[in-house]
View 1: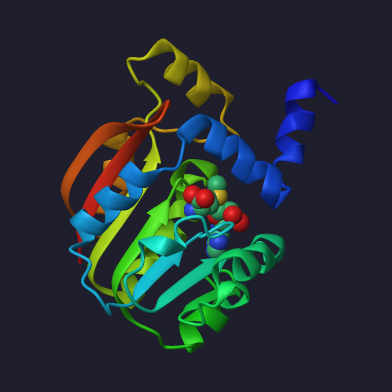
View 2: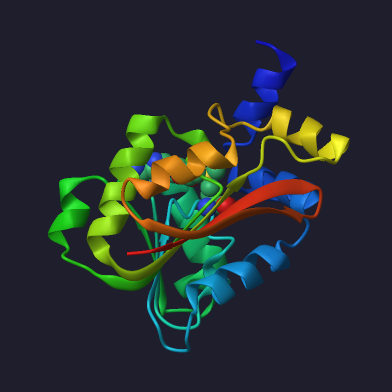
Amino acid sequence: MLVVDKLKQTLENPLLFNLVQFAISGKQNITRRLIRENLHLKPGEALLDVCCGTGEFANVALGPYLGIDINPKYITYATEKYGAGKGHPEREFVADDITGAEFERRGLTFPKAMMINSLHHLTVAENEAVLAAVARVTTERFVIVDMDPTPSNPLSKFLAEQDRGDYIRPLAEQVALAQKFFKVEQSYTYYAGLCGQTILVCSV
Ligand SMILES: C[S@@+](CC[C@H](N)C(=O)[O-])C[C@H]1O[C@@H](n2cnc3c(N)ncnc32)[C@H](O)[C@@H]1O
């Protein structure tokens, strides 16, 4: 196994995944602020976090929060670190496939939703299924944050090239994907620490 493949496998461990994210992107407070502002998030409003991973962005919420991720290891970690385990019963984490019948059967709706750093891990077909599911349950606004494959900072570009995601797309392709399901009001790039990021601000 190549060293790079071994490293990527190691990142399946939630703690190591977060350490590497922190080393590259810092605390990501700029991302949290941009998401809140662009969602027009109000106190008490429910928020859906699609592909929530280890729950690092749960504290964007100003009210009830549901994080959903298909990886049960990440969900156990998130519940202990950011949910009920840390005195936050208003933050629920579920291990489920957002595109599956079980989630649809729950019949939930959310005024606001977010999907962070996940688009580039999924194929076009997988993204379409995830975005269609989000569009079914979101009633007002949706923000997508992802990787910028062409940041001008050379170190940031190098880091983007090392990312575990196999499908890092230019911003225009990210917008084209989102436009199939949402009205994309705004899209632009920014830096979170050394990491070049994109943000797509969508309405339903
Ligand atoms: C790179 S992680 C992003 C985690 C988190 N949003 C963050 O920024 O820290 C992408 C996540 O998408 C999840 N995922 C992929 N397809 C999914 C699906 N259909 N339903 C729910 N989660 C999914 C994966 O398990 C993985 O944890």
